[in-house]
Length: 102
Image 1 (cartoon, helix red, strand yellow):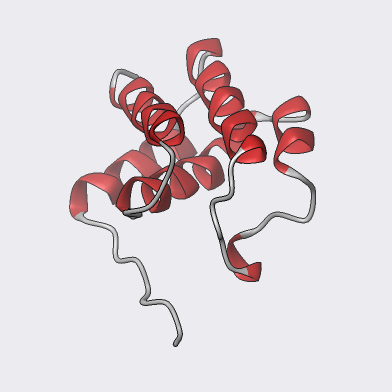
Image 2 (cartoon, rainbow, N blue to C red; image 1 turned 90 degrees about the horizontal axis):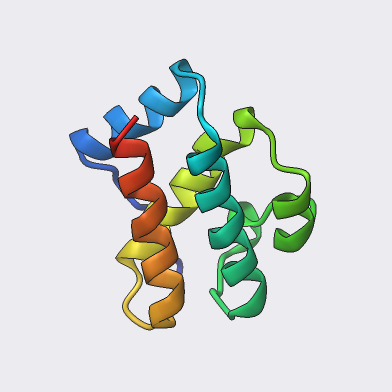
């Protein structure tokens, strides 16, 4: 059975746009790294279209400011999942809060 498409609410779209348009600071980059490292440890079950070309740990090591919107989208997808490890949900929420604070 195909997964349903995730539709972002207005606030999520604003946050994605915000981190696309704004210079991100080291706090946000750090939160992205933590989330990607947690994703590397856990089994998140993303489909092929959701997976990056490199591993999550490689993404964490090579993250650039232009990668932040992509990681934020992954955070919103993780937040919506029911059967996700608590550490992963916490890392996703931490990233979302860091971007809200920009």
